[in-house]
Length: 166
Image (cartoon, rainbow, N blue to C red; front, side):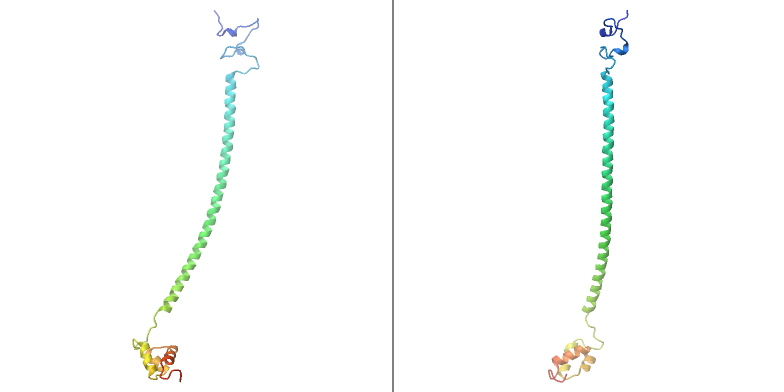
């Protein structure tokens, strides 16, 4: 007994059928130009996979280009920052040097005048008393450790005769 698996696979109207003319899933006769649904499904999946791969490749390429642009921008920005930092460092060093010089100048001008050895501790008071008693500028310089300008000033302000004989 030779039975066909599907009733529709029997020849109709005396036309002989071949196995390739029968759909393997439904058992229906297939025209020569008709493509089985499984083959269509597989072809659709394959096409979809090709398009998905192409889309992924394009997306990856765009991401790579954007990353390259961002990296270049960051590199350029960091070079600018390094240059600005070195300029600021030079300015800070120059400012520190200027401050150091000013400190030294202030220390020199603020240092008390050193009296020569043998000069009394109350040099100005003693100079004023000597000036009142009529001492000359040279006497004030020698005995009180005053400079010429200081001795002249003390004599003018506190001399025996104010404003005369200077």
